[in-house]
Length: 395
Image (tube, rainbow, N blue to C red; front, side, top):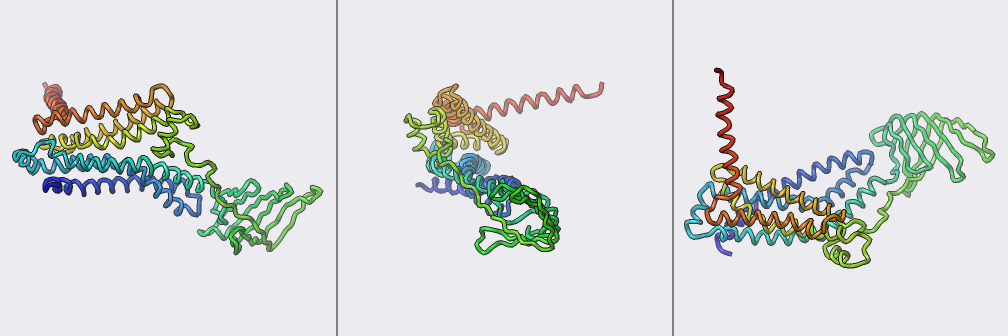
């Protein structure tokens, strides 16, 4: 690597890391708030949310890496352009292709990282996320009763309370309905109760005060028991386990598993669905190789107008590419369009735009079809303003 290569890569490194970190943290915080709201009734919600957030990292890395890489290149090239460093390099005989070469090498390295993330980390983390979420949503009773809630630890046990302390262990005006092993109903009410876990952590002991119990004897006759103090033991239920194994969804399969199942007759998933998922991941990963061809010319074209237009146009193109690939996967899943055509067309169109912008800018650096289109739009808006002003002026 030459001095210029090291200099260009060093300029792009920290903006890319900063953009990736900020975007990743923002997305995780937003998702964490939603998870906390979803699991608000669970006493161990913070533990579950922490596990879910960790398993979301590969998913959001795959989303943020292309956008952060593109934004970092636009910012760096624009900064060099504003300070006339690009002009000096071009005057010294450094072509636009040579200027983009280190960024193409960086894009190749990021493509390898994306293949690892899309192909292997995301399938396992997605399954782990679903397993933890399933466990959190189906977690059994842990011995705590929130205030003003109806708690159903199992189909044979229902517990409600009108008030509870912050720890959920001292209750007021409690109602318990239980079906015993013989199928007989038992209803217990009390003005106050305290909950204590047993030493084996498999049951809880309720110490009830000032209440009564309605139950039915063997002949089916009701009996009412009034008490000043009464102790009842109830079982705690453990969390349900994820019933199915990994691979029930095509997004839980690795690249090699997608390829093997798409070319075999033993898969329970449709072949076009598997191929659409496979081609979609490859398109997103190899799309990183095209970003320097788009970002470098747009960064150079922003000398007069600033970096915003280039970043906005490039961001819209990236967003459109991402959604078109998703649309192609959906069409492939329905069987209306072959997966190679549904996913390959957006990739080829995006590649054609990137190559067109880059090779057009090679002849006259800083001039791109996108920049010319933006200038024509700005000129048209500027021509319309005096007409509106003249039309609104008093006679």
